[in-house]
Image 1 (tube, one colour):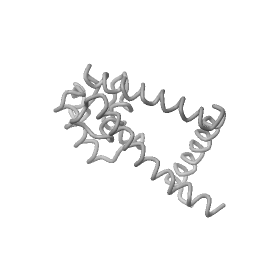
Image 2 (image 1 turned 180 degrees about the vertical axis):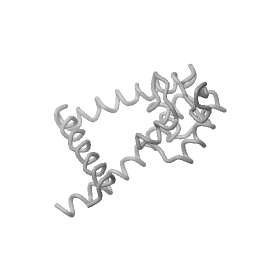
Image 3 (image 1 turned 30 degrees about the vertical axis):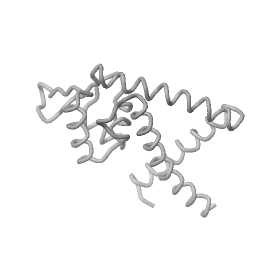
Image 4 (image 1 turned 45 degrees about the vertical axis):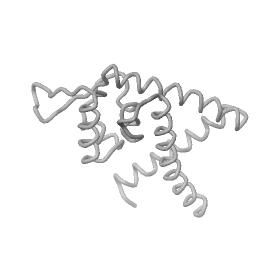
Length: 150
């Protein structure tokens, strides 16, 4: 089990980098040249609603300094709108602009195609659900370790 676990953790890290490559290629194919894969992923995580920047960090999506830098760039390039909360000037809410929504639509279409391709490759959709379920359990294990230690 130990060697399988180590291989799994290495694979997760490689898959994340590979997915950023996939996003970079998709951005290029839809004519978006001013943002990178991490920023595109941030747009998809923000989605259709509004989100407080602090929530992006607390949900574990991004590190603090990277969030600030990427939010600034995405705002400067017209993909995000920012608004400070009236009751707390430190709290900033972001939401996608129309330009940001178009990028997310392109990424979602690519994800749909890749999802179908992947399910065809493995033979049945239940395997995808099983893999996702296993990774959610691993995430919970890591969350518990972070909270409670050994």
